[in-house]
Image (cartoon, rainbow, N blue to C red; front, side):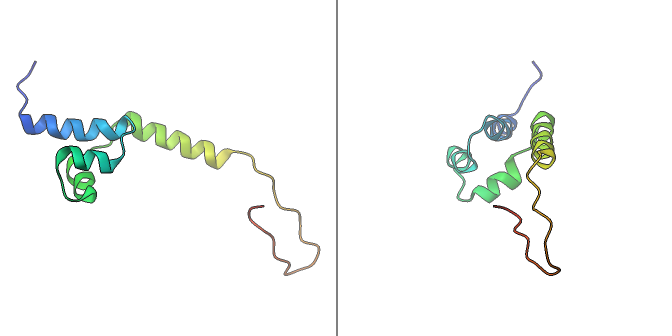
Length: 83
């Protein structure tokens, strides 16, 4: 194995934990940071597989067929977006 600094392992763990579904607050506590935003901004990376899964989930949500609202009977009638 190539030499890896201990700090590099820390960053790796911080990226792997959210990819495994661990909440950022838990990652923050594990690393001993005072702010989860610092942990997210400084220590994590998004793996390509995670980014692809997020894109696919979003596309599925957008492409899901939903009931379309009925046509308004009169001009200016309010159409509810969700039931």
